Length: 303
Image (cartoon, rainbow, N blue to C red; front, top):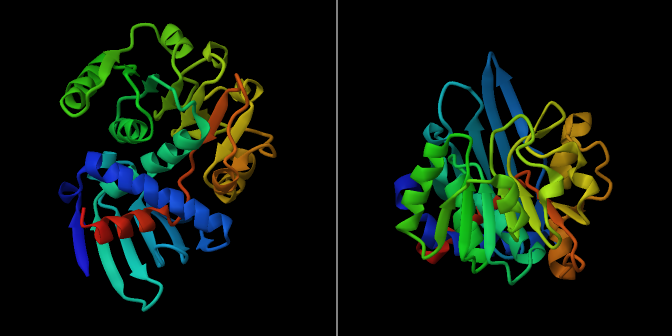
């Protein structure tokens, strides 16, 4: 059994492996070979623990869980999450991952799979809204999925965008630009990723050009949502990684009508793509079990 900490995980190296593992997870899900119940919360005082539990029995043959706390008094990067990976063949504990990094890689890899199947293969320009903890992982996934040439980074605190650009420019052969005019930049971007903690919309749906992919990673509640309510009126293909998790939100979900949302596991084998000039929307929820298969792939590949 291995114990792996954040400092041992190289995001750029691992992200293609993670995207492949997540893609296999969704193929297995479409074949009925996964278990992905909605997350379970245990609340005490002003916080608690959240558990995501899942299994994939076709390719990786693993079962496990991720647990993280919901107490408000620390940064995400300080959150010592645990991901445990067990074999479904003999029940042995293969590894424990400690830290927040695997969870962030998992979230980004899911969006990476969605980008692979839902965005224009010839996409060259992207805009990232948000320069916080999740942004660098989302960019790693984006660049693992598409050959992007220019990325605009927008943040309400410009210095945060500048800091992120400085860090990423040393790692990737891509032109990173600080956002100056979000409306104009969205209007010429092929891919938009919203990775914010904002409780109110960070963009206008009318700014999107035809044939654009937009992925939402941040809040999606009626009372707190990074996308506008009318986004659904401007898109053609709407997909999520976990319909079960959306249903768990019930009336609290920011979209009142969720009937047109398709599941990513059905999208992949069908090779469904947006129609010509159609805007596609991916609503990330964090499907349970995906972090377990990524952890397993990291172990097996020796990364």
